[in-house]
Length: 158
Image (tube, one colour):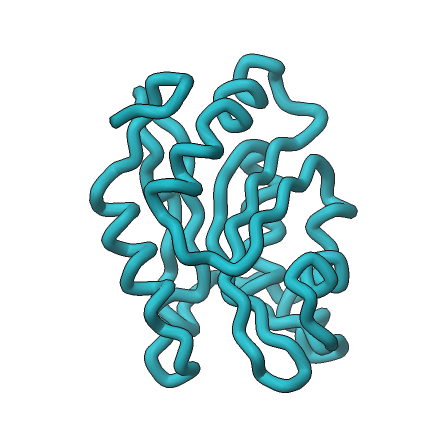
């Protein structure tokens, strides 16, 4: 079954998401995050680094050390901003260690209209194919990807 846009979800993405979403226990987490892109009519895995293996810049490492923001989220945020249009799955944790699996639909305001329409029109399909997340967030610029904004969207406390 394809979405309104004719885009289909790759079974490899669904499998990776299912493994990632069942890893609520910190010791069982499989990936730092999962980023998906639309290419040739499919929603595919763009990047899914194994737990602890995302490639952070020195600046991201310093910011993570100075703040209470996981370095994996800082890397994910950068990747989304660079790509302009992507879906991402990330597990946010609040002060009480409560986990909240989130689907982020990043559609940068400055991207091409055709790309924005493709991602916006296919969001229901990825939502239905990869159900079981706690929150869905649409972001259109870097400010909307702020960690504190994401924590609020997930109804968690810092």
